[in-house]
Image (cartoon, rainbow, N blue to C red):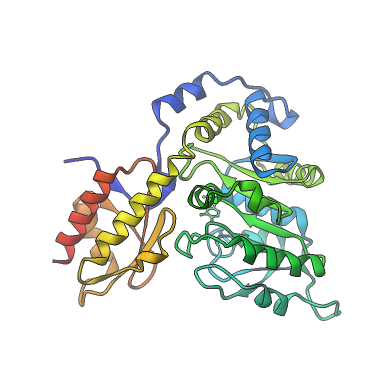
Length: 344
Ligand SMILES: *Cc1c(COP(=O)(O)O)cnc(C)c1O
């Protein structure tokens, strides 16, 4: 039985021998006291990449988003985000539970919104309203199919935000995927945001860890709430070393994941009974639909699994596949062969 091709998520990547070695040799200290040299080196590197002052190390992308939102809002405030965004759909109700905010949802196209849509829902001062406290974007957009925000759309939203004095947050879990695909730098995007995130544990291949990024005062606020959320870690340098290794070795190669996603989409487009928008696949995430009468998603996924291919069901007909550094071009070709066999 050949090794299984796991396309459920880019979170399934395992640390490579080189990464494990870097972890074993990491210099460490107490990070709650800001004394872990590896954590601090990673902070400097990520802050530099994003062109910001602070980049706090946190356990997960969820914690990064939630700290950013908690640090920039008050209970009873309202925040604006796209309907299919990660913090609203996939963070276990943390917006309500931890930040105590309500959400004004906007319908985007593949997760991308227009400035006019935002302008229409920013609250004016009125005793009846929950004040608009934050505008959140996601780049790349997970449920949008790994879509990339055009810079001019971000800029236009920033103008609305500035004219209404509302700060902006970027869920940048996969911002480096956007950068590798467009040739832009993280800072080119981050300049429009007051806070940003980065996940080291997705396509970058680290086992754990994210960063929440912003100004020095923002970093201090986030630091306090990280402690409050129970997220203060001690000798976290063992984990940060994996993040450093990931940034040094696994960024440029994200381009391979994008090629593999395209290859998979092109292959799927040629299979009758499966439906995919090849042009929408621009990074490492793709969604496709099963349109074979009688073939339900659970049945389809089970047959794939029997043949050693794992994907994720995301709706009545919808499947998600994500490419990453533990899936090769050969793995993609094998997945395609199994897909052909399963719908036949
Ligand atoms: C994965 C992900 C996160 C955070 O995920 P964790 O599992 O908490 O690390 C946040 N935003 C987006 C867009 C994601 O894909």
